[in-house]
Each structure stands twice: as C-alpha cells, then as structure tokens.
Length: 82
Image 1 (cartoon, rainbow, N blue to C red):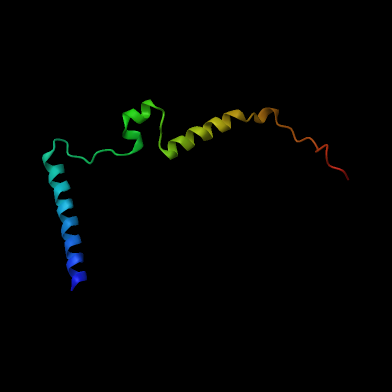
Image 2: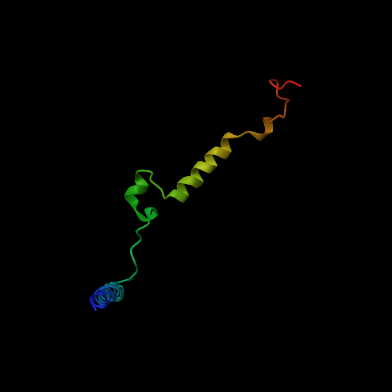
C-alpha cells in the first residue's frame, strides 16, 4: 500500500508540472518552449562555444582543407627490403 501512495504522489506531481507548463504556454505571448540548446545562447556564441555536432563539423572542414591531394604520390617505401 505504501508503494501505491508513492506512485500516485509521483504521478500527481508530474501531471501538476505538465499542467503548469501547458498553462504557461497558453498565457505567454508567442508561447513556445525556451530554446535551451547551446546554439540558442548568445553568450556562448560570443565566446566561440558550439554544440558538439557543430564543433565536429567545423573541425572536419579544417582537416579536409589541410590535405592536398594534387601533390599526393604513391612512391615505393624506401625502408622496405625484398
């Protein structure tokens, strides 16, 4: 019986929180959820902090620019002995 009380209390609290968010979305002008992603924070953007996917994409671009495929040659390995 104790476990049932705890579960009902948890369900009640979660439903109360959801109801509060729904009411706030209806009453606030342009009611949307706030953008909590890293890309939505202007202070992080000013400091050059990006989300991991954006950071990875930028680093991949830098890596591809460093490779010069026009001067690539397939010379035999000089350390190899037959």
